[in-house]
Length: 232
Image 1 (cartoon, helix red, strand yellow):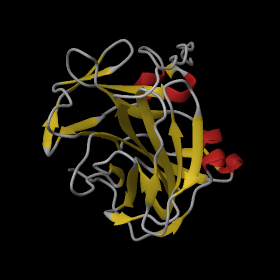
Image 2: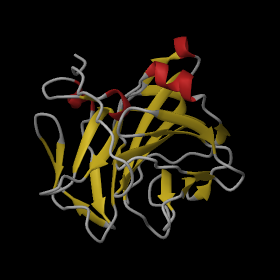
Image 3: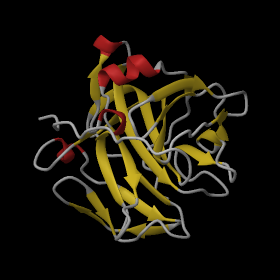
Image 4: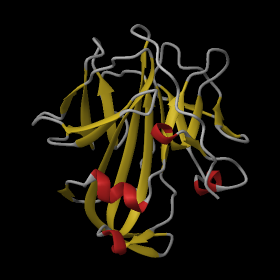
Protein backbone atom coordinates (compact mmCIF):
# COMPACT_ATOMS: atom_id res chain seq x y z
CA UNK A 1 0.00 0.00 0.00
CA UNK A 2 1.35 3.41 -0.94
CA UNK A 3 2.69 5.51 1.92
CA UNK A 4 3.63 9.10 1.10
CA UNK A 5 4.89 10.46 4.40
CA UNK A 6 7.68 8.78 6.33
CA UNK A 7 9.39 10.36 9.34
CA UNK A 8 11.51 9.41 12.32
CA UNK A 9 9.11 10.10 15.12
CA UNK A 10 8.46 10.58 18.78
CA UNK A 11 5.01 9.29 19.70
CA UNK A 12 2.62 11.37 21.73
CA UNK A 13 -0.61 9.94 23.14
CA UNK A 14 -3.54 12.01 21.90
CA UNK A 15 -6.40 13.11 24.10
CA UNK A 16 -9.49 11.98 22.20
CA UNK A 17 -11.50 14.91 23.49
CA UNK A 18 -8.90 17.51 22.51
CA UNK A 19 -8.38 16.00 19.08
CA UNK A 20 -12.06 15.77 18.23
CA UNK A 21 -12.56 19.39 19.22
CA UNK A 22 -10.29 20.33 16.32
CA UNK A 23 -11.99 18.14 13.72
CA UNK A 24 -14.62 15.60 14.71
CA UNK A 25 -15.07 14.07 11.25
CA UNK A 26 -13.63 10.75 10.14
CA UNK A 27 -13.94 8.13 7.41
CA UNK A 28 -15.68 4.80 7.83
CA UNK A 29 -16.55 1.91 5.51
CA UNK A 30 -19.99 0.33 5.18
CA UNK A 31 -21.23 -2.68 3.25
CA UNK A 32 -24.85 -2.23 2.09
CA UNK A 33 -27.10 -5.29 1.86
CA UNK A 34 -26.75 -5.10 -1.92
CA UNK A 35 -23.99 -3.67 -4.07
CA UNK A 36 -20.44 -2.57 -3.42
CA UNK A 37 -18.87 -1.17 -0.28
CA UNK A 38 -19.04 2.56 0.40
CA UNK A 39 -17.08 5.13 2.41
CA UNK A 40 -18.73 7.89 4.40
CA UNK A 41 -17.16 11.09 5.77
CA UNK A 42 -18.78 12.51 8.87
CA UNK A 43 -19.60 11.31 12.38
CA UNK A 44 -21.26 7.90 12.60
CA UNK A 45 -22.05 8.30 16.30
CA UNK A 46 -23.83 11.63 15.65
CA UNK A 47 -25.65 10.52 12.50
CA UNK A 48 -23.73 13.07 10.41
CA UNK A 49 -22.93 12.14 6.80
CA UNK A 50 -21.36 14.81 4.60
CA UNK A 51 -22.53 15.53 1.06
CA UNK A 52 -21.13 16.84 -2.21
CA UNK A 53 -20.89 19.67 -2.98
CA UNK A 54 -19.76 20.44 0.54
CA UNK A 55 -17.30 18.99 2.99
CA UNK A 56 -16.85 15.79 1.01
CA UNK A 57 -14.51 17.89 -1.15
CA UNK A 58 -12.11 17.93 1.82
CA UNK A 59 -11.27 14.34 0.83
CA UNK A 60 -9.44 14.92 -2.50
CA UNK A 61 -7.87 11.55 -3.19
CA UNK A 62 -9.10 8.61 -1.13
CA UNK A 63 -7.27 5.37 -1.87
CA UNK A 64 -9.06 2.07 -1.24
CA UNK A 65 -7.93 -1.56 -1.38
CA UNK A 66 -9.49 -5.00 -1.35
CA UNK A 67 -6.68 -6.89 0.31
CA UNK A 68 -3.69 -5.59 -1.66
CA UNK A 69 -5.68 -4.85 -4.82
CA UNK A 70 -6.41 -1.15 -5.49
CA UNK A 71 -10.06 -0.20 -5.91
CA UNK A 72 -11.58 2.68 -7.82
CA UNK A 73 -13.32 5.33 -5.70
CA UNK A 74 -16.26 7.25 -7.21
CA UNK A 75 -17.61 10.30 -5.37
CA UNK A 76 -21.40 10.40 -5.22
CA UNK A 77 -23.89 12.69 -3.48
CA UNK A 78 -23.38 11.35 0.04
CA UNK A 79 -20.75 8.62 -0.26
CA UNK A 80 -17.67 7.32 -2.02
CA UNK A 81 -18.60 4.18 -3.96
CA UNK A 82 -15.94 1.48 -4.22
CA UNK A 83 -15.49 -0.97 -7.09
CA UNK A 84 -15.82 -4.09 -4.89
CA UNK A 85 -17.88 -5.44 -2.02
CA UNK A 86 -16.52 -6.45 1.36
CA UNK A 87 -16.47 -10.17 0.66
CA UNK A 88 -13.61 -12.53 1.39
CA UNK A 89 -10.99 -9.77 1.41
CA UNK A 90 -10.82 -6.95 3.92
CA UNK A 91 -11.35 -3.47 2.53
CA UNK A 92 -9.17 -0.59 3.68
CA UNK A 93 -9.03 3.08 2.77
CA UNK A 94 -6.81 6.07 3.42
CA UNK A 95 -6.74 9.80 2.70
CA UNK A 96 -3.21 11.16 2.87
CA UNK A 97 -3.68 14.41 0.92
CA UNK A 98 -5.65 16.37 3.53
CA UNK A 99 -3.96 19.79 3.90
CA UNK A 100 -2.05 20.99 6.94
CA UNK A 101 -4.26 22.59 9.61
CA UNK A 102 -3.45 25.19 12.26
CA UNK A 103 -4.85 23.63 15.44
CA UNK A 104 -2.63 25.50 17.90
CA UNK A 105 -5.74 26.91 19.58
CA UNK A 106 -6.70 23.31 20.40
CA UNK A 107 -3.30 22.51 21.87
CA UNK A 108 -2.33 20.26 18.94
CA UNK A 109 -0.14 22.58 16.89
CA UNK A 110 0.32 22.69 13.15
CA UNK A 111 -1.04 19.28 12.14
CA UNK A 112 -1.05 17.11 9.02
CA UNK A 113 -4.25 15.04 9.31
CA UNK A 114 -4.13 11.43 8.08
CA UNK A 115 -7.36 9.41 7.72
CA UNK A 116 -7.75 5.62 7.55
CA UNK A 117 -10.59 3.08 7.67
CA UNK A 118 -10.94 -0.71 7.73
CA UNK A 119 -13.74 -3.24 7.16
CA UNK A 120 -12.68 -6.84 7.82
CA UNK A 121 -9.83 -8.73 9.41
CA UNK A 122 -6.27 -9.30 8.21
CA UNK A 123 -3.25 -11.24 9.39
CA UNK A 124 -1.11 -8.11 9.65
CA UNK A 125 -1.69 -4.33 9.66
CA UNK A 126 -1.59 -2.51 6.32
CA UNK A 127 -2.50 1.05 7.37
CA UNK A 128 -0.16 3.39 9.23
CA UNK A 129 -2.69 3.44 12.08
CA UNK A 130 -4.65 0.20 11.95
CA UNK A 131 -7.08 -1.77 14.10
CA UNK A 132 -7.25 -5.52 13.53
CA UNK A 133 -10.26 -7.40 14.94
CA UNK A 134 -9.79 -10.78 16.62
CA UNK A 135 -11.52 -13.78 15.08
CA UNK A 136 -13.90 -14.16 18.02
CA UNK A 137 -15.10 -10.55 17.71
CA UNK A 138 -14.53 -9.74 21.38
CA UNK A 139 -11.23 -7.90 21.04
CA UNK A 140 -9.02 -5.97 18.62
CA UNK A 141 -5.43 -4.77 18.45
CA UNK A 142 -4.19 -1.29 17.53
CA UNK A 143 -1.01 -0.84 15.47
CA UNK A 144 1.02 2.22 14.53
CA UNK A 145 3.51 1.74 11.69
CA UNK A 146 3.09 -2.01 12.03
CA UNK A 147 3.84 -2.19 15.75
CA UNK A 148 1.35 -2.65 18.62
CA UNK A 149 0.38 0.73 20.07
CA UNK A 150 0.43 0.53 23.85
CA UNK A 151 -2.23 2.47 25.78
CA UNK A 152 -3.95 3.67 22.60
CA UNK A 153 -7.02 5.75 23.43
CA UNK A 154 -10.10 4.44 21.63
CA UNK A 155 -13.85 4.97 21.37
CA UNK A 156 -16.43 2.33 20.52
CA UNK A 157 -19.56 3.69 18.80
CA UNK A 158 -22.76 1.61 18.78
CA UNK A 159 -25.49 1.73 16.11
CA UNK A 160 -27.78 3.73 18.45
CA UNK A 161 -25.22 6.46 19.17
CA UNK A 162 -24.02 5.05 22.49
CA UNK A 163 -20.24 5.39 22.84
CA UNK A 164 -17.65 4.04 25.24
CA UNK A 165 -14.04 5.19 25.59
CA UNK A 166 -11.04 3.37 27.00
CA UNK A 167 -7.36 2.56 26.56
CA UNK A 168 -5.60 -0.40 25.06
CA UNK A 169 -3.26 -2.54 27.13
CA UNK A 170 0.53 -2.70 26.78
CA UNK A 171 0.16 -4.82 23.62
CA UNK A 172 -2.34 -2.46 22.00
CA UNK A 173 -5.23 -4.86 22.68
CA UNK A 174 -8.73 -3.67 23.53
CA UNK A 175 -11.80 -5.53 24.73
CA UNK A 176 -14.96 -5.04 22.70
CA UNK A 177 -18.54 -5.49 23.84
CA UNK A 178 -21.24 -5.45 21.14
CA UNK A 179 -24.53 -5.68 23.07
CA UNK A 180 -26.90 -4.86 20.19
CA UNK A 181 -27.34 -6.16 16.69
CA UNK A 182 -25.98 -3.89 13.97
CA UNK A 183 -22.96 -1.87 12.87
CA UNK A 184 -20.31 -0.55 15.27
CA UNK A 185 -17.20 1.56 14.83
CA UNK A 186 -13.96 1.48 16.78
CA UNK A 187 -12.14 4.83 16.48
CA UNK A 188 -8.55 5.69 17.40
CA UNK A 189 -6.69 9.00 17.16
CA UNK A 190 -2.92 9.25 17.61
CA UNK A 191 -0.61 12.25 17.41
CA UNK A 192 2.94 11.64 16.19
CA UNK A 193 5.66 14.26 16.57
CA UNK A 194 7.19 14.22 13.10
CA UNK A 195 7.88 17.79 11.91
CA UNK A 196 7.91 18.27 8.17
CA UNK A 197 6.13 20.05 5.35
CA UNK A 198 3.39 19.16 2.92
CA UNK A 199 2.37 21.13 -0.16
CA UNK A 200 4.59 23.99 1.05
CA UNK A 201 3.03 24.16 4.54
CA UNK A 202 5.03 23.24 7.63
CA UNK A 203 3.59 21.00 10.32
CA UNK A 204 4.67 19.89 13.80
CA UNK A 205 2.70 16.65 14.13
CA UNK A 206 0.97 13.97 12.11
CA UNK A 207 -2.56 13.40 13.37
CA UNK A 208 -3.56 9.85 12.53
CA UNK A 209 -7.26 8.93 12.74
CA UNK A 210 -8.59 5.47 11.94
CA UNK A 211 -11.81 3.48 12.21
CA UNK A 212 -12.70 -0.20 12.19
CA UNK A 213 -16.22 -1.22 11.15
CA UNK A 214 -17.67 -4.21 12.99
CA UNK A 215 -20.96 -5.99 12.32
CA UNK A 216 -22.81 -7.76 15.16
CA UNK A 217 -25.24 -10.22 13.51
CA UNK A 218 -26.90 -11.36 16.74
CA UNK A 219 -28.25 -9.77 19.88
CA UNK A 220 -31.12 -7.47 20.75
CA UNK A 221 -32.26 -5.02 18.07
CA UNK A 222 -31.82 -1.30 18.70
CA UNK A 223 -32.73 1.97 17.01
CA UNK A 224 -30.46 3.78 14.55
CA UNK A 225 -29.15 7.30 15.14
CA UNK A 226 -31.35 9.80 13.23
CA UNK A 227 -29.50 11.24 10.25
CA UNK A 228 -28.41 14.79 11.11
CA UNK A 229 -28.06 17.66 8.70
CA UNK A 230 -24.66 17.73 7.09
CA UNK A 231 -22.28 20.54 7.95
CA UNK A 232 -21.67 23.27 5.38
